[in-house]
Structures are given as C-alpha cells and as structure tokens.
Image 1 (cartoon, helix red, strand yellow):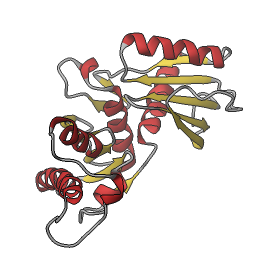
Image 2 (image 1 turned 30 degrees about the vertical axis):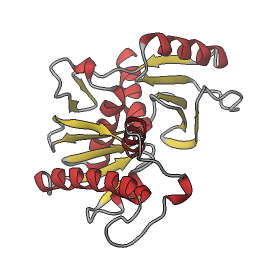
Image 3 (image 1 turned 60 degrees about the vertical axis):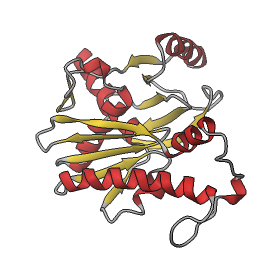
Image 4 (image 1 turned 45 degrees about the vertical axis):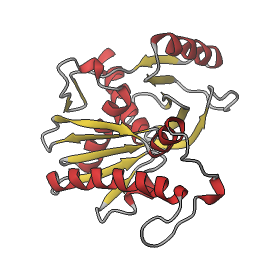
Length: 244
C-alpha cells in the first residue's frame, strides 16, 4: 500500500513530459505533453519527480510544477547504488539515467525473476537485472525515428515523402522502404542477439515503439507502458517510508 494516498509522478524525458496520477497503487490517468500540463483537477499529496534533462531545465520545470501544485510534498528521484531490492551495476550509480533505473526496478518487481527491460522511445534502452536483483548493465542505441532522421540529415539524395512509407513484401524496392525497414531490421537484429544471451529471462517492454518492434519478434514480452512511473512509485514510497 502507498504511504501517500494521492501521488503524481512526473517523468521528464528528453522530448516530452509524462504525468501519471496514482490513487493508492492504481493509475488514475496519464498525460503527456511538451510542457507541464495545467488544470489536471488532481490534487496530489506528493509529487515524485524524475528528470533526464539538464540541471537548469529540471530546475525550471520543478518551479513550474510547484507553482501549479503549491501544497503538494516533493520527492526528487535519482539513480542510487540500491533501491527496492535492486543493485545498480554502475561504479558511479548516479550516472545511470534515472529513467533506466526506475524502469529496471519496476520490471524486476513485475517479473519477480531475471528480466530484460526494453524502453523503445527516442532512444532504445536495454537493461538486464538477474533474479537476485543485481542490475548487470545495458545498452543505449538510437531509436527508429532518430535513425531515420540521421540518414535524412546527413545524406543529400536519401529523400522521400511520408506518404511513401508503406509496407511491402520482399526486399525493399523504394527509398522509403529501404530506410524505414532497414532501421527496423537493425533494431530487431540487435534485440535478437540479446535474446540469444538471455533466453531464460523474462522480457518487459515500454516506450512508444515497443508494440510495433516487439510484435515482430517471436519473444514473449509483457508490455507495460507505465513502467517508469511504476518504478518511480516504488522508489518514492520507499524514500517516504525511510523518512518517517
């Protein structure tokens, strides 16, 4: 059971801000946008704040949110050497992205076993936690959109319109298919190699591209689109209990 009745998790990613409202351990709603959404009608007891943005950007966002919710408590979350029974692989634990850390904690608690965590968003992040709760490390690669954008911005003649991006059979026979399907194949090959090493582990996935990517793999995967928020809830609750 939560130590606070109403919790708002703020997950500030590189490209958007995700707000997840909890009552007890149940998710009430999720909102995503470029800025902190206002007038949500939710009055949280406490806000759990996790940001991968710079210190300056995080401070500005912190001020905006506190102005919107002046009576709410506040807990800033950061990567640690250990939290909620998970042990960080990094020699400098604070350098592991807090989104990866929270996702790994949530996935481990959901799987109750060794787990491979996939976050397929702007970047594709993979983390591995063994059945003892030890985070073994992970990978970061460009996401699908970033791969395509890199090709388009760094070449003179790779060009196509969005209406040309259509599926097809066999080898790609247009520039649009060559780029989009080529990027998919690169990521799928990367994930298949990881699966060869961790066949016995459970897989948990989150992120906007998780469904389209992992649907093409013959790997049993649990999709959990609120993974980082669930991890934030676990860690924030633990910190509040420790402060009491």
